[in-house]
Amino acid sequence: MKLIWVHEDCLHRQSPAFKSYPDAPAIYVFDVVELNRSGWTLKRIGFVYECLLELPVTIRRGDPIVEVPRFAEERGCVGIVTVASPEVRISRQAQAMHAEILPEDPFVELEGNVDLTRFSRYWRKAERVLAKESA
Amino acid sequence: MNLRTDFSSRQDLESYLHEQFPEAAGNLSPIPGGRRSGEETLRKFQAPGYEASRNLLSGVVSKLSPYIRHGLFTLREVLNQVRTAFPEGRLDKFAQELAWRDYWRRVHYEVGDGIWQDRERPKTGVAYSPDLPDNVGRTGLACMDAFAAELDATGYLHNHARMWMAAYVVHWQRSAWQAGAGWFLRHLLDGDPASNNLSWQWVASSFSHKPYFFNRENLEHCSEGRFCKSCPRNQDCPFDKTYPELAAELFNEEPRR
Image (cartoon, each protein chain N blue to C red):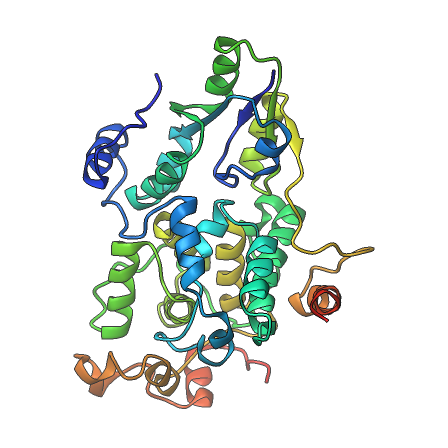
């Protein structure tokens, strides 16, 4: 059985991790070092907390790299799974705990290389796909 | 140690969070977290009105960004639900705004922590202080002080208010966009480094062809005059100029047209 590491980008029962492992236990860890570094106000912590209260998830505070594997061991889980994030901090933590990283659900599938230097170049491709869908 | 999950009220939760996170400033936002609140917010969104009114502070906007930011809705789910709810509605502009979030996120995947650095050379010719201005929330400008107070109290601001405030901090007060971006991330319920930082860079012109700025006429129109009439600086408004006058005052390079 795997353990789902829920991080701040995937606070939903329909996230790819819960969909792939519907019976797996899950944990969220408030990263205290990061909270102090970024200075998140209580509003932000509270919003995340209220999202977590609707999930089947254990909540802890500390260092995710320590707390997530510790909880996996407590629950007898073999392996950790989470969802990809562009945040370098989150992907480093996921790698440090050797987690399986599931891709996010895409907004729009674009073929070939996508030039991201300007929105207009991305949009020329994305708009065509979206227009086809609504036609 | 597991944190509690049983609370009798939001006040109970707030007291507990103060105990557990004593360094975190402020109180809970009036905007509640959770999928159920997100669904209620989505149900209220009259998407066909978005395109015509979104630039007005009183206009139709979805207010879904805190829920999208934390993955309670994917962008795709929002688009599909809105299309289903309004099959005949004009939704192109709203779809494009969802695409902006997808675009910022793709850029974040590509550049990683580089979203904290200028993506390009700013086109202003101006030097910036690394610090946020000392007088945030106490500028004497009714609009800017009201936006700062709303950000502090709720963790949410209309997008146009964010743009005005970012332009004011960067171009009028000459603070580095990173200082402003960090300030927003401390407060915004929807604060994610991709949308937030890259939008600040768009305003600052380190991720766009020209700086974004505004004048009083624009702000007064889109706020429907709610700030200017009672503003202590009504007769001394730094925004009460034409765009060419402001460009000459704010920038050392000629902004592109």
